[in-house]
Image (tube, rainbow, N blue to C red; front, side):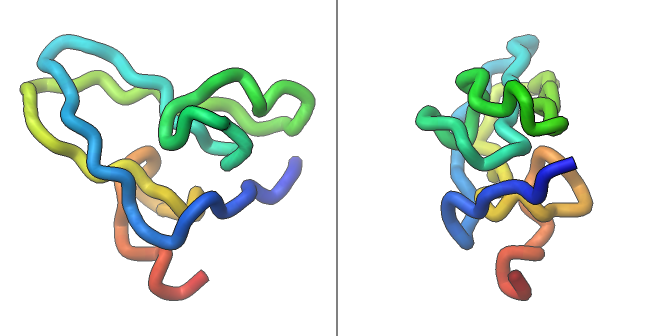
Length: 79
């Protein structure tokens, strides 16, 4: 299993829509951060699906080391 790339050491605020699903990039290689573009293929890593319960702004992890994937838990402060 590969270690994810750290695209940024802060969360990505994303306006999500109730009922819609989002594929969070777990590998860090996506050009469409924080969402998956298929760059994980061959890394042993896979995107995490997030389904929005309500329309709101959520904070997707940017460092890819969160313990609460796909959402930021503050881990970026220590990596």
